[in-house]
Length: 473
Image 1: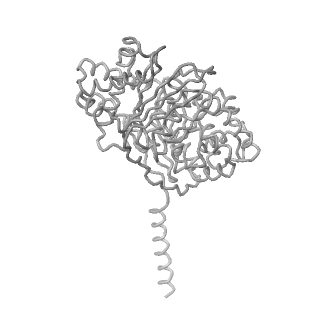
Image 2: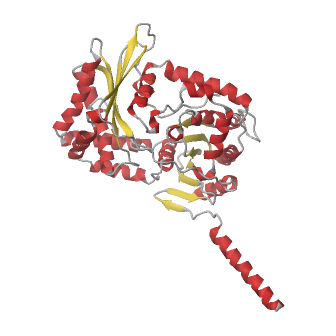
Image 3: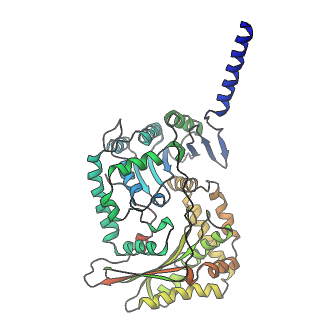
């Protein structure tokens, strides 16, 4: 009987061991596709590596799947504030020491917050990669958020908001434009946050945000440069592998409600010249029913604003001289539906309404007349060349990988880009213009200069940036 009892215990031990082996979190196998190697650690953190031996330099980036679009009313800007506070010390480092250590090794580091992600990066000699990973792992779980540091830093961020938005007429116009364009899409909120929310934010808001979203199973490590992938995976496991994963909230879909007509907003602010921005609601890769439409929208933006030979520059700036500058914008990589934008500064004496009509006329021309194959070929070549040139920069290679991974598209999507763009026809460009660039999808914002203006709206890109800015030391 004793022998049977012992045998039963041994059998139970074996079964339990097998069950633990099957269900315990384990590192997945390393995958290698087209020069990119990936591995998911047992705690859910994804590691992506591209070997590049051009120089003994490495780019290390940690991307968190959280940004301005994750926030709710009352705490807008919390992702950006937390980005600043990530440099203010851990259980092992004093405030600012992270940056001092990287600088002492000859490296550069910074961070940025966007609508859909927050990222931290270092560019450094490859011999110091291990140091970077050790420091990043430390602040992923050991950040010290104190009232003393928060009170100082929130004032820095308020001043940043004043300089970059409140006192910048084009940025202020873009901010109010987005707030009006979207009703329930979270892109209506500014990444830096409303000043009213910054005024009432406290360190407890940051602790909650940090504990909710900053976890290995909500992060992607991207390493590009003169490294050996197997060594990177080993270091990632050494420093991040033991960090506990968290229960990441599953957010409800936040699809924009239907719009029933044109929306308009005026921004009256100190400025020297008027400024106009128009936006049509459009899908992105994550939301489109037909992804070919997304690449057609990308080509449409290139037709209108793809250098000096593009239509807006040729027809409105140099041709009729109705505008001193004009542009179009569209980004296909996002979590939620976005906007296809047209923007311009009218020339002296030109009424903003005439400027708006001229922009609409350029869109209508594409709707009514197929672009020539010669023009399509030129724009395809420009768009593809721009994408290829980005590959010369390790940092931008990492950026593209990080963005695609973080918004849920996967880095492989980048490999499809060139062929998808080359396949777009003039008919498809015309179809998306007719379908999406229509009045019922349109929002128009106008900057109305006030007489005491000392600023101008000459920098069109200022309000279009999808970043909450980099931290100040």
